[in-house]
Length: 371
Image (cartoon, rainbow, N blue to C red; front, top):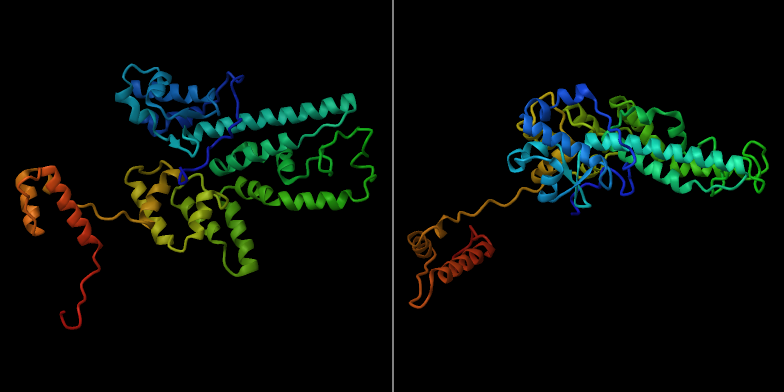
């Protein structure tokens, strides 16, 4: 599973107490899953979307055909399976994820974590106690990184309070290692100047978290975010970072969502063989299956690019196994004939050994004198 992408939602993303599932009507009604689907296919697809909301983690489904049959509530699962699973991708935890459902789930999960953080701060202030909110903030940052990867233009990422947390400058956070409620009697208020090293500590924390905050800033604006990053990089090194160039190229070719921080952009940007021409060829191949205006998800493009970078060896002609006559002909070609006590499966095995041995031999020299 090393080549599979990481799960689109965190393992602890739990929305079982959220009975409401947001649905963007225009996005649904103009999708290929809806437009090209029959009644049974549409019903099964929507049932899976809804069921995934309360799975663990949210927006996931088990990669098990019997469970999918049950969750789809379809009486003709084998008939509708291929269409109902459009858009679902398998991730490194062995589960299936849908980017659109994951986008909605991450938005709800972030709102839930933000409410928890706000409640903890309120209780700390009310009861004048210390509160360590580092764990919740880490969950928020993790969820934000995943949302940036699949939906960089999400409205959730534009919230000022969320940006402050990601950048490490949340107004309610204390600069010390632990997040302390402002009215705690054991520490000074952040605005009191009681901590002599507060500004230095805060500065270091901001530097440590800066890359994540930069990811939010550069992706909220869509294409403009990476183009600004490219311009900034050009000002320092004379040429844009390759991951930025890859993300801009792919977005222009209709690959969504794609940012310079996307794992695949970083991976392809670091591979010298992954040229613009190869990426364009990969998108062209994907477009044969996903015509415009449907966007191409990066994870859909990934196996195509992988095959272009590392083409599989040509398939061996195995028609000589189809009949005894064909096997005898292949044997004569290799100078072999069946032994008196040898069965045809044994003879075919011996032929295969000869083919493998010939394949391992170095190519014949074209110069010099024969031995």
